Image 1 (cartoon, rainbow, N blue to C red):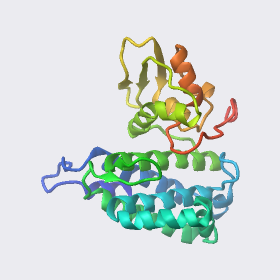
Image 2 (cartoon, helix red, strand yellow):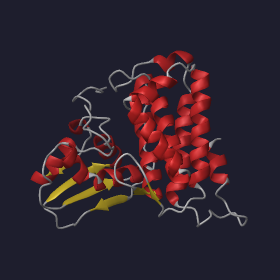
Image 3 (cartoon, rainbow, N blue to C red):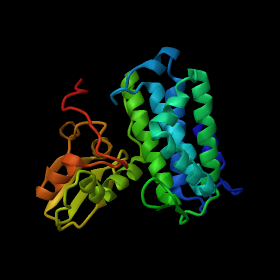
Length: 279
């Protein structure tokens, strides 16, 4: 389903966007469409191209998204299945085993498998209650937070695919969701690195792709991060080294945070090296 088709399902009979549909649902559908268009542009050989994530090919990136789109859908719509699956994954020794199961698929099979999972996730997203508490691999989260996280994952892994096949990443207004997760995840980044969260607020001021300003934190904070929204999102998803993101980082708290920032769950990532993608 293309972007226009996703959006068409959210238009009311009077031609206006259905105000009952949360914006994250609209934007998630468009992020999935953008990833679908990127994959459609690939050759068969592109599927085996190595990505910046060590040991992962383009196919591995698609597998990862597909696996967790399905599990997010189960968490929202069928929590008993999610709990049973979590137990099965633990019994098999972790996520790597279920990832390995999908590696036997051909590119065409993998594409259809991923598309089917993304359609099921969107079907659930359009009708679920956004405040619903959903089980996950750590603390529970709201359905809105779950879907926002899926948008962030779709964008971040599409970024890896784009890097692998030599396609430029284009900034969109949907990056605001990614940036928001990055800001909100500041305490988690310190916890993941077994470091105490320093006291003090950080002001984040980002220029959106349409020229608008996105802000978080107190304007009186002594620490701040300023710059382009794309650069900030690349930093907090660790798709670029923070020093390659064009950000102005001032103050001890901001410097400490941005050196370890991560918008994704799990242990700290290896990130990227400075100058790795210099043109």
